[in-house]
Image (cartoon, rainbow, N blue to C red; front, side):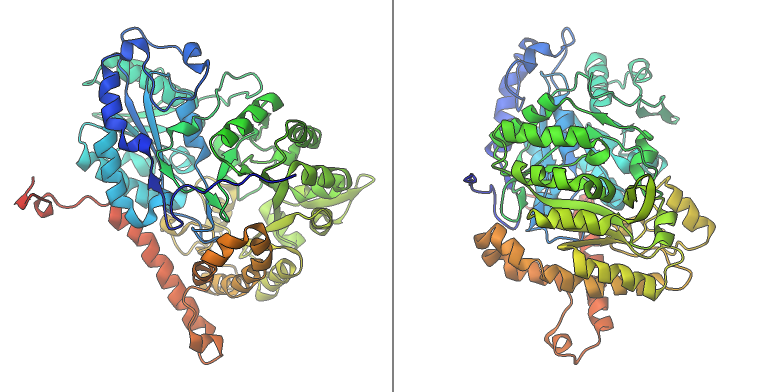
Amino acid sequence: MTRRRRDTPGPAAGGTTSARARTWKRSAQGARGCCSRGAILCATPGAREASVRQAPGADAMNVLLLSMPDSFEHMPPMAIRMPNGALASLAGNVDSHHRVAIADLILVQSSLRSTIERLVREIEPDIVGLSVMTFQRATALAIAKLLRALRPSVRIAVGGYDPSLAPAAYEGCRAIDFIVRGEGEQTLSDLLRALETAGATAHAPRQLAAIAGLSYRLSGGFVRNADRPIMPLASSALRLPNRRARVLGGYTLLGRTVDVVETSRGCTFDCSFCSIIEMRGRNFHPYPIDRVLADIADARANGAEAIFLVDDNITLDIVRFEALCQAIVDAGFDDMDYIVQAMTAPIARHGARLAPLMKRAGFRYVFLGIENVLDEDLRFLRARAKNAQREHGRTIGNASIEAIRHLHEHGMYVVGGLIVGNPDDTRSSIDANLEFARRYVDWPYIQHPTPYPGTPMTRDFRDRGLIVDDDVSHYDGTTAVVRSEHLTAEDIEFLRWRAERWMKLRHLPAALGHNPLFILRNAFAMMAHTFAGTSLRSMIGLEDDRAVFARYRERRRQERESYTSDAEPERAHLRLSQGRVRA
């Protein structure tokens, strides 16, 4: 089937401000006078407006939702820039009279401060929400302070994995008013209702106290409400994400416009490294397939050519996954590229039937959670069961090779997720995993064990005294922050870095087939990212790899610090306005 082509919005180097953001201020001012009639900006179309409750006499609020600019190291930013699907879901589930704007700051890494200033000036937000992962914490705190300096009256909320699992890290920041813990759609909706009911000058403690999943600031400190129960998606009233609320452009996967779709939430396994279990427990909640198809249709209508299914573990229910693949084919949505995360064991066990169906549905890249190829490490990671190949009720080996074989036989690429640097790892055990990646996977996604808040892995490493770096800005998965009993953290990271960059080079021919023009335009920049720190002398063997590695680490340090420094509020006496000092 012929694949559709659309131009990717925005330049390759970053995001563009859409007309929706540029005209926001004029439109919002016009809408303020008719908010009692439910005036809508950036809302999803159709019947959703009529189905959303609006408090009598409520004022519409300007809501700005931001994801952080810090990105993972594994792929060059020009090659992959994904939208934050959680923010679009939040935007789609607030009362429809509110005006919501979403800005994924990964799209504007080189113009972070100016973009935030422009968004605040044009949107005039009443409340700003920040979605934060652990390694983005310092950036989020700096952005919160910048927002407070730019607009002192704004209310600021944080949510996502890190605020949910380490709320105390945010309670000390005076710029932050609210912490949304766990699933946020209903919590944010309830928060906006409480704030609009209370008016512009009060926090409405009585209304806030009734909101499950919320922590809020009072004069004596933060009050933590009860946790919000996990939402049963099959029977929930969650509406589709509001993708039209996005005000920046430039989402891409190797030159194709990409979006994210969620078909389920949760996982029933208990891997020691996983934050999902710590945040929501061991459970699995799927959406109805009709709802998933409607979400895909909406992503297509908003320009998507590729879809990343961001489920925590879609292969927990293989029968449902097969039904979803068939439904995609039946709906005619198989003219897109799909990317999915999967366990090895179900793919190995059902691959003869599942893999050809996935191929027909348009699946192109499969991220396999291989985790490790050694039993001792899988035991530490609590990942043996999900990677076990079984016959007649008995475990007969690791399922990874069989899963990869099924996928490769049907023309799909394998992104291999591996974790090296576990407590008892030696150089030979790390080399065994790196050699496996060289031989079998198409794109390596090799990480180091990272002590994220609350995980069993964190307790294990701390009890054994193996954590050597407590700066969570380094907790990005590719910076080694723990040592093993036999290797330093720097040695672990060096072994991974030295091998992985050459593995990534092998994927260029496949990427060229995916989108030749994009690769030809961006090959040099992609190679510069992958081989950062490399010199001509090192390429011809006149410089040691350790020197190159040191330059690479320095570049990563400067990159991390740039996001925080760019978001730091300027001192008032240094701000100039028309040649005068502005207080």
